[in-house]
Image 1 (cartoon, rainbow, N blue to C red):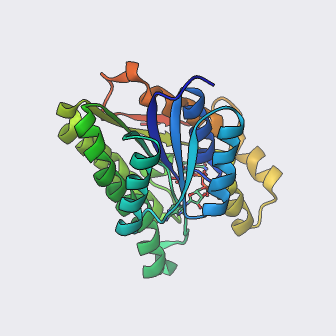
Image 2 (image 1 turned 120 degrees about the vertical axis):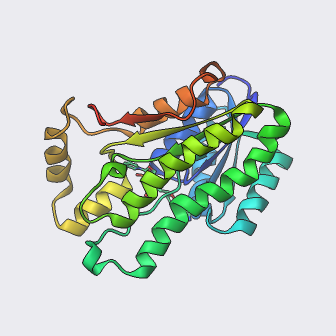
Amino acid sequence: MPEASRVAIVTGAARGIGAAVALRLAYDGLAVAVLDLDEAAATVSADAITSAGGVAIALGADVADPTAVQASVDRTADELGAPTVLVNNAGITRDNLLITLTENDWDAVIDVHLKGAVLMTRAAQAHMVESGWGRIVNLSSTSALGNRGQANYVTAKAGVQGLTKTLALELGRFGITANCVAPGFIVSEMTRVTADRIGTPWAQYVHDRAQAIPVQRAGEVDDVANAVSFFADARSGFVSGQVLYVAGGPRT
Ligand SMILES: NC(=O)c1ccc[n+]([C@@H]2O[C@H](COP(=O)([O-])OP(=O)(O)OC[C@H]3O[C@@H](n4cnc5c(N)ncnc54)[C@H](O)[C@@H]3O)[C@@H](O)[C@H]2O)c1
């Protein structure tokens, strides 16, 4: 791995897409703070980076808790240096048709995706503004375009796109870009749980979903990590406020 020259925070990086993004950014030469609700799993993720010759720390925090968020950003700055790359990836699903959607499930999903992204960005942007440079990459989803049984998640992921465009407008003058990566169907624990919930065997679920994707395969976590890496790169400074669908086909 190259020597670390910048510092990134990746939320929800204990597993799945976040873990792949953290590893990829470390290969790109960044020191990475691996933040997750599950601190033990975050430590495993951070250890994988350090074993491969990279620089990483693990942080246990809930992105929807302002005190924990500020403490995590402070610790990153103290131990690794000013965080100038932020990937807001932490996410949950609590799927239900509107008729059975509980207020708790609405609040939980909106809190993690939207409040979490706002709190993390507000805390990290102070370092980016001071550095005169920054990259914010937010995880949206093809679900932002509407999806049956996901009113809470769809609203959150559409909101993430609006938030991203607003961050691009507000922070551009400080050398900071903000972009969204919006994955389609990606093989991860999150989609495995969905298959379990609807009672379809995992292999059948992946096969059926792949049939409906133009490139005829399911997405892998590295497909998403590659897109995040592009937006986080120093050479991508004239690309801001964009939504890149990583879905094996077009989306409007
Ligand atoms: N898997 C897909 O098909 C898919 C598609 C589109 C978008 N996404 C989005 O990509 C992101 C990652 O998805 P994934 O499939 O890797 O999910 P995942 O469930 O495998 O991993 C999510 C991680 O986020 C962490 N997390 C959850 N709540 C948190 C909180 N409050 N604070 C800190 N960490 C928290 C979890 O502990 C977990 O490690 C999510 O934002 C998701 O909505 C996923």
